[in-house]
Image (cartoon, rainbow, N blue to C red; front, side, top):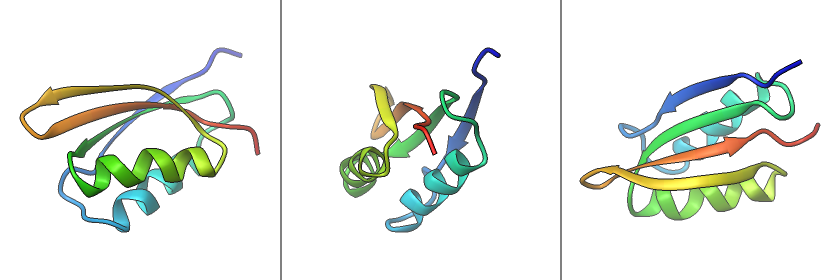
Length: 79
């Protein structure tokens, strides 16, 4: 079955809620599914990718999409 892709905008949130929202979104997905996460630079951009990788997910892309706004593409890891 092909993977699906979802999006999550956490630009209005602050740490640690940024990670919590990303983690909860990934938990609703199947292994291998992709999640595009839009977040702000600074603490969210520093902490969210590292925390998601620590939980077994793979950050496969990170790019600036606007002034101070980045987008991560994350592949959900295995259970």
